[in-house]
Image 1: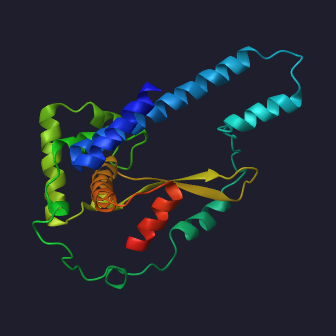
Image 2 (image 1 turned 90 degrees about the horizontal axis):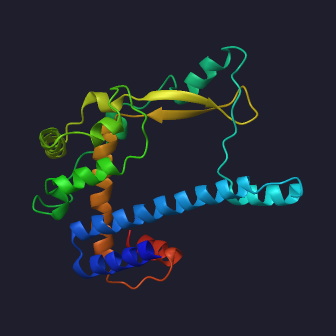
Length: 240
């Protein structure tokens, strides 16, 4: 309850000030509540399992299990490699549009002094790194865990690199290469779901951009009074 009250307080502060520092504080409070609820759910599941006895009905067990619902069904490995060519043709077809066909001409929609064009600061970088939940790395083998243990000098160098990419708009070619892992769908040995792992640095850069856009849009729309998530989506779609 204290965490919920703290989140509400930080949300009110952000609505009043509109600063990016208060925005990140509110986001961190939301993340803390998410972790707290997950831990509480885990503890409840352990308590439930420890109190099981032969007198519990099957219906009761399934009812509780459906409420938790976060179960993982192991997938079986295919008997042969006949699926591989079909899988590759779906994720990497023979023809793809060229850059000139899909990339529109670049226009300066905002002035060079707009808040969205400002250099990233250290708080934006550290927030993006701390928000990475996955431990998987891309083709560059840079794990998100490594980034979370960088010293201050390395963080300064990384921040300078991100700002240089942001200013020059030159994306490193390695960020355009992905590791694709096929995961068999449930009860199937011929249908696969591709899991794509991209560069951790690319994910950090994307998260910094997304957080800044979220902050800008929320400060833009917060003067309007919203009630409920559905009304937020409806009002946002009117302004998009």
